[in-house]
Length: 113
Image (cartoon, rainbow, N blue to C red):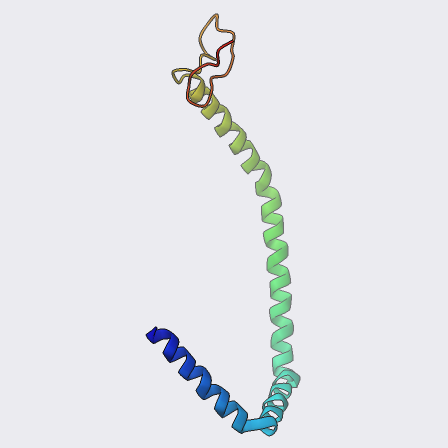
């Protein structure tokens, strides 16, 4: 409750100050913002940051493309190892000679025929 009261008090104070500042102050802030955006130094920094972001995106894409086949192969190998370990669990009967290789139910018990 204390947090709500503090938040509401801050919101009310900001609203009152904003209302008193009025349209004139709003126009001043917009004008200052436009000056900053139109500044050649800011525009140059924006272009440089955009170019760097594009470059990093391309590098990340290339690295991902080269690593995906490796990840896929690793996942396949891990899955086959895990499958082999699961087949040796009691109730699986997949590795038992002479078994009909029917999978066990979730609880490890074979379904009745």
